[in-house]
Length: 178
Image (cartoon, rainbow, N blue to C red; front, side, top):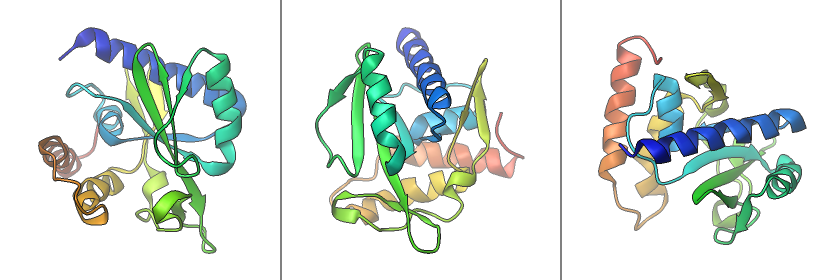
């Protein structure tokens, strides 16, 4: 594992949480870092840091990230996901909205209005060292990793996703995370 990169990403996660807390903005880790925070320690190298944020909160969050030295990246539709970089590391904020029943849905882009898994935002507070961070529920994490190749035709099944599913299922079967 690239310890320097892992430490840098952990510092950026802590900084992002400090910024969000100061703004009163809720964030949830998703992807590999969500799994690691649930388990209580890094399990592998990560290419980026994935988050969920509410669409209504992205403007103040983006302003403060930019004020703190982050750079805005182009890519996904801005109403679906916002991407930023700091210290050579990318953080992606997938945007959430709510449907008429209060369920989390994709906020924009080609899948606007599609529901995310039930209970996704009810995950625990994960922790690595002294950094605590809300994470999506492990069950939702598993469902997203299983279904992404179905939801996005042409997206291949990745070996790291299969391994993450195995690790999460084992942790849940054995009584939880870290």
